[in-house]
Amino acid sequence: MSAQASPSGKPLWLETAAIALLMTATLKIMANATISPALPALEASFPDEPAAAYLTRFLVAAPSLSVVLVAPFAGLAADRFGRGPLLLAGVLLFAFAGSAGAYLPDLQSILASRLLLGVAVAITMTAQVALVGDLFSGQRRSAFMGWQTAAINFSGFLFIGFAGWLAGLSPRLPFLVYMLPVLLVPLLLPILKRERTARSDSASERSINRVSVPQKGWIIPALAVGFLTMVTVMFFFLMPSQLPFYLDENGIESASGTAVGLGALTLTGGVVAIAYRRISSIVGLSASFGIGFALMGLGFAVLSIDAVWPLILGGAALVGAGYSLVQPSFLLLALQVAPEERRGSVSGIVTTAMFLGQVVSPLLLTMPIQDCGFAAVYRGTALALFLFAATGFSLLLFRPFRARHAG
Image 1 (spheres, helix red, strand yellow):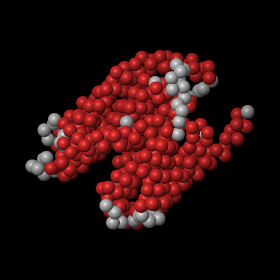
Image 2 (cartoon, one colour; image 1 turned 90 degrees about the vertical axis):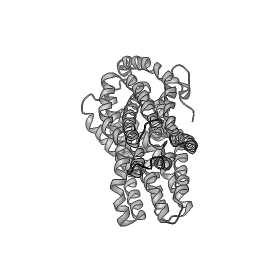
Image 3 (spheres, helix red, strand yellow; image 1 turned 135 degrees about the horizontal axis):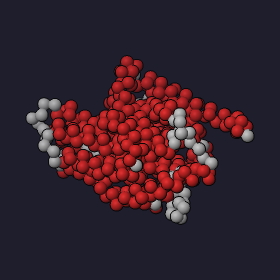
């Protein structure tokens, strides 16, 4: 994919602001997954803690709980105080809270630091998405969203691999990985100035381009985007949350098998995400949703056939490819449905929806899996996603009518 050139002549992937925002987006996956390789050794290092087994497992999910609770308020703060200052504060809090587990004395205090890490994630993700809306538009925004999804996919390999090596030395060392975002601070400082410039110029730019975003009535479309995002993430999260149990039930070694299956998902998703701008510019946003949902539905349909490796890898790859089209499309849609001064609030809604989908996925889908089996739930998920795809494609049928009506 060739990134679209900026007004300064630089391609998108060479812009300082774009690089900083891309790296900031990867904190989302760093927050939860980085300490996973250290959990068994961390549990063993607290032999006198009766609740060690429960507390260590909850350390991974704890940040998501805080994000769900804090992100809406972080969105309001971003609109009130500015996205740039909030992003910088979130990154610094992320480094402080995330690395605290390296030296805190007990699991209870480490758990508290993980909850505080979730606050930092909520602040960071909300401000980051709003800044993307402020600093990029049109095809450049689409290009950035594709690169962002790819960066999140690929960075997971780097963070988890590095943390796994550190965990072999000490279960506390992986927490030091959370200090890496401090290196982003010099790149984030210029964004504060650029944000002020972009926001002051946006009114005149909209007047020239005759682009108008409704100043009222945005909340219902934003909540609708948030709800659809939550449902989509709920289905997608069947992969990381239920794939180990699916493999184990079918006699496949779950630890290495899950790594291989999710590896196929993230690698395929990363490759497709790089091409997102080109795909969306050709087919449009509605068709991007339709193709993405169709690929995800096909992936789950393949998984429902039988637990053999060709189908497992093929299904996981299809789900990853589809989600890499749907996720950036939701972010683009969220930035379109609200006026500029409400981008922080909309970003908070979508951030909450993404993490809420992760939380509700095992809560709502585990019981149907136990009662009906994996194959039935995968087929039901495929059917729901195919219906979403049909809705996305059906919106294309209204374009000629809207064009004639506008004419």
